[in-house]
Image (tube, rainbow, N blue to C red; front, side):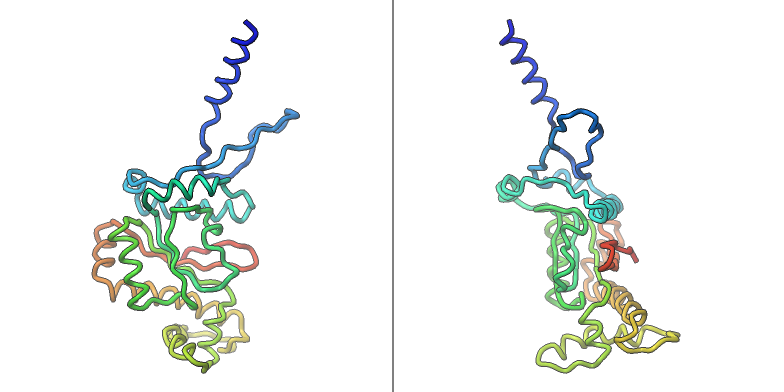
Length: 247
């Protein structure tokens, strides 16, 4: 009889331990001496789950994920299990076009795991043919619902463009960013890389210019956005707080 009761108790305990959804690891009740560890996320996004999402839902998930990142409450994940599960296929929610900067761990910034997002990186987060082709693959071919162009505070590429840096292949690369400098109008401060406010203004303008460039050079993405299938948005990452300002 005791064995039967013990077996029933164990079965109920196992049945109640469902896989944790994304949303952090806060425990609702810590009054007991034994605090159970949160279940790990072991599965990647499926095609059905991806298809059911709207662009607005994905944007909200990115915003909520960033809030969890700021408060150091990231979702617990079993990466080994997710690697194996992801081998079956990938169905990401979004494509993030980020700067090369090593201080921006893109997946963590939005509390995303394996198979959740595509990440394209280039110094200065600008777009060219290769980047736009990658964005088209991410959305038109693979079903992502959002493109987020992510600039950031104290961007070295932006500073280099402002300072007219000339060095090897960096020089033509910075040419993609320079239009943002001219786009900043009515700035009363010092228009140099020493003025943090000017660097921020140029970085944000560069994000908006990149979005415009994506739309103007990709009929595919422009049409998808017009139909409501995707949204193309911008963001600005604060190096001091980890917060993303959505532009």
